[in-house]
Length: 423
Image 1 (cartoon, helix red, strand yellow):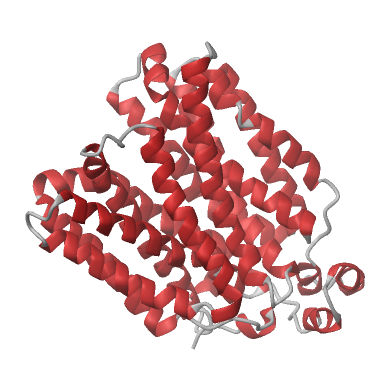
Image 2 (tube, rainbow, N blue to C red; image 1 turned 120 degrees about the vertical axis):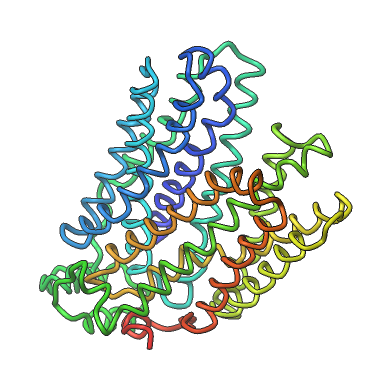
C-alpha cells in the first residue's frame, strides 16, 4: 500500500509539476519560438484539452484492460512526452507535446484513483485518496520554484527546464513495474482465483478480502453511467467537480490584480504563497476526512465560498486588504472541498465503471477549468467585476445545492456499500 500510494502521489506531483513549470519559462519560450498570442493561448490550453480527451479514454481503457497495465502505460506516456520537450523546435511541436502530456494527466486521474480506492482499507481510504491533491499542489509549487530559480541562476534553455519533468517521470515508471492488479477488477472479470490470491496478500484484514467477493462479474458501458441506478451518481460526481474548479480558476484570475497591489503578482512570493494556502486547506481535509466524514467537508465549505464570492461581487469600493482577506479565505475553503474531488469518484462508482465514471467526471471538470480560465477576462471587461463574481458565486451555490442533495457519507464504509448508486 505504501508503494502504491508513493507512486500514485508521485504521479500527481508530476501532474502539478508539468502544469506549473511552463509558467516561469513562457516569456523566454515565446521570444525564442516567436510565438503569437494565439499560439501562446493554444499551448497553454493544450494540457486542458489533453485532460479532456485522456480522462474518459483512460477510464474506458482501465475498466476494459485492467488497472495494472494502464497504470504503467500512462506513466510511459509521461516519460515519452517529457523527453520530447528537450527537442521542441516549433509552436506546433510544443502544442502537440503538451497535448500528449495532458492526455497522460487525464489518464492518471481515471486510472490512479480507482486503483487506490480498490486497495485502500476503508478506515484510511479518504485520506489516502486526498493525499493525491496535496501532491498536486506540492508539485505545482516545486515547479514554480525550480523554474524561477533555474532561469535566475543558470543559462539552461527553456527546453531543458521543461524537460526536467523527465527526472520525475522515469523513476516513477520504474517504480510501477510489478505492482499487482486490482483484486476487485479481477473478480469483476471472473478471474476469482487471481483476485483472492492478491487480496489475501495485500488487503489489510479478512473483512476487506470478503468484501472483494461481493463484486458482481458484469461489464460496464458508457450508458451505465446514465442508467436508472447510476445517473444520480454521475450527476453528483461530475457536477460537484465542475462547480468546484470553475469558481477556483475564476477567482484565481481575478485575485492576480489584487495581489499586484502588494507586489506579489507574477513572482515567486505570489505563486508559492497562494499554493501554500491551498496546501493548508488540503492538509486540514486530509487530517479530518476519515474522522468527521465527507459531507461536512463538502457541503458547508461550498456554501461559505458562495457567500464569499457574493460579498466580493457586491461590496463595491471594498478596501484592497478586505478583498485580499476574502480571496485568501476562498482559497483556503475551496481547497478543503476541492480535495473531495479526488475521493468521491473512486468511492461512488461501481468497479465495472469506476475508471470510466472517474474519467467522465474529470473531463466535465476540465470544461469548468477552461471556462474559468478563458471566459473570465472577457466577463471582467464586458460585464464588470460585480457580475463576474456573482456568476462565480452562483456556480459555487449550484455545487453546494447539488452536494446538499446528493453527496453521500462514505466514511468507514466498504466499496460494496459506497458504490451501489446514490439514491
